[in-house]
Image 1 (cartoon, rainbow, N blue to C red):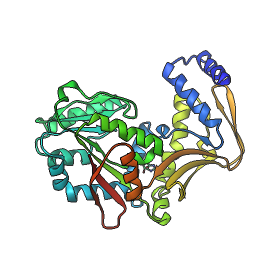
Image 2 (cartoon, rainbow, N blue to C red):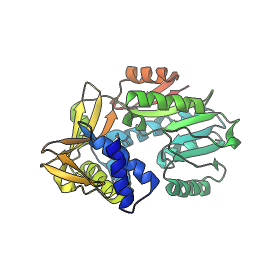
Image 3 (cartoon, rainbow, N blue to C red):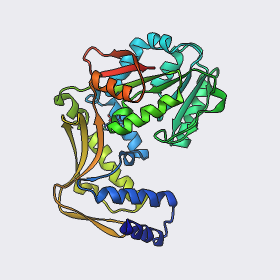
Image 4 (tube, rainbow, N blue to C red):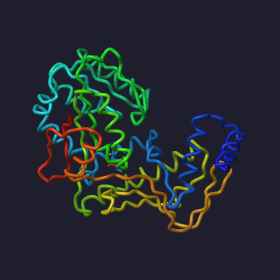
Length: 323
Ligand code: AVI
């Protein structure tokens, strides 16, 4: 820790005293000192990374988005009936896309929609758009990190709450984090429900290309995390000195994304040199894939009961209503 503090001093002396950046710097340094090295997947999502993620969702190999959308479109009337009328829909993570629109349109007189996201400007703009398209729905954006405790506006305290958590976002959390998050969301919706989507276990021949596509979009998405670090924290990663790797880890039931150093190199971060051997990796993301049983056990530990499951014909993806 002492050396992390020294690095932070360097950071301050270098004329960049932003408090949040110093905390970020400390956590990046800590991750890069581990064996194997790791950084948080939050580094994917700067403006370019968000655009690349949108491109990923359209890739022929990335079945996740289109499979979930097809399940939703097919079963929305039943989902909406089970959620019941006058629901207050809470969506953790940036929503207000097509899936949200479809759900809100299928529901019987939703009382309110509460999108929760850290990207405040983006959130407000999306909320304004939604208000103009659906003037009868009260939209109350909450600017917060949904992995931390947050409050739903007081105006909605009497509404029956339904959490909408699509996109297999739950797959990017390790088990204990996923349990903690699901339990926290349960406390937000007492007596209510949650419609959640997750990706299912399938052959590696399908999974690996979904995270290592032929056009190289996922590779660019992974490498962009280094550009983001350089810009935000003043590191000097050379993205050309790394390559993308996606592997299926059948024991942990997850796709892992890594950045592999193509040569021995040094990276300067906050006045310190971090050494990379040729072939050494930075672990950047886990994407867990569930069986129905394993997801049920996760949900149960978090205090939820599964009341209905919908899947596609290939059994690639599942949307579940929890209560
Ligand atoms: C956001 N999340 C659900 C995506 C996934 O499939 O785990 C992130 C992603 N990483 C690479 N491709 C997509």
